Length: 133
Image (tube, rainbow, N blue to C red; front, top):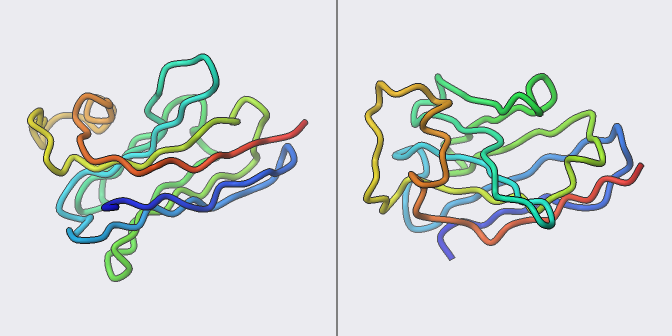
């Protein structure tokens, strides 16, 4: 397993969780890293992405102001802090890296455009977040 996602769970509406994406066998900060989620019956969507340096980030409109993505290079881990959870945030959350991707976007491309699942080739196994109302 090259990417290990963890931190999901069952929380009440308004609660918080911190998801972790730990990489093994490669330096996570060599690539753009993203968090995606997939709710039952829906397409997998990009939630947040972070550049290699951590200096640029992107958030989907639905999570802006509530989610924060960050890197800890010493721990080779990317985090997603999720606050003010809503029932509609219920989904399996996946972390992903552009490592091994044949579709590497130009670094000048906006993070919003880079946060597209087609550019990500290395995926974690997913962690389930369930928000009760």
